[in-house]
Length: 370
Image (cartoon, rainbow, N blue to C red; front, top):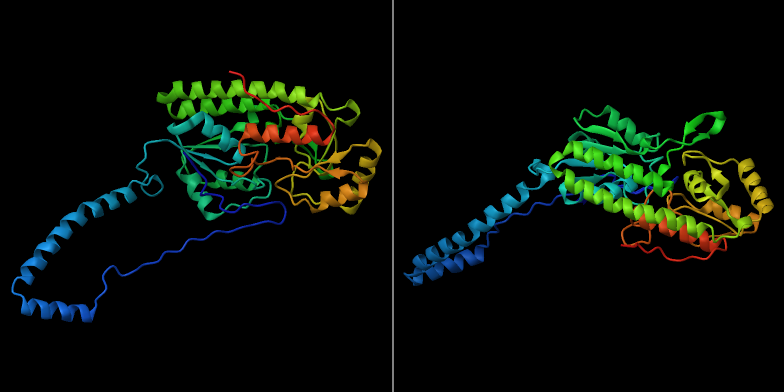
């Protein structure tokens, strides 16, 4: 089961934040009513059998309530979050994408906690106290790596827990990109290719098998089923992108998160407002150069992203005289439950549909073949 209590703040880079708090109320379970007491006393005095009847009723009620009270206490104590009584291995996943893949592979055999909520930007996420507890109590921590989630990686390295720390994204050979001031760093957005996601699934499967060898067969079967779906998804995306006219097959986005998508599906990354991390802030000169570039390459639309405030990219679209695609792209997070991107597969399908339709291609829905 997936628990997303941790990361209780959904953050949209760079300005959105939300904090949730809990309070407890205590009420007296027994209230004394002087008038009722007086009436009862008068009745007892006038009726010699009332005390006996009252005693019998009291015992009957107590006999009925006692099992319920015992049941209630047992139910509370069985909560694995408070007692650790659940024998299922505790797995913590940092990003929503990794949490989704881990849930599909681990199923009901693991107790899974996703730190980040859908829509949260892992680049700028600041851990909350509950995150420390989840990391310390975990048996296995699945994180992306390549510094995608710097705040959580720092907290994880400092935690005193016993958990194995598995960098799921680092099983993929990274692309090397240049950051500000000429620094060369690995691109952490490896899930942009469904083929890379297959490698991540295999890494998660192996990590879970090592953690719980008795569930090897279940983990293997679920991973194989997911791999089949991702293989078909990879082919479908390739076919969809090829329906876009060649001279329009160029992608301009808010931040540089689609290099793996561009490489594997043969669509050029023609420009971005900021680099690979949303911590960066674009200068006026950067905005001006991007506007000029968009005018020159002649793309019909550019794209905002769900985890980043769209105000600036809207301005770029207006100044460049192009359309801002109506469907924002899911970049660093899957969508909220019930959205068209609330799983990794649906996220990739939604992104591809948005790109194909906005750039003049012919979209055909993804259908999994048995």
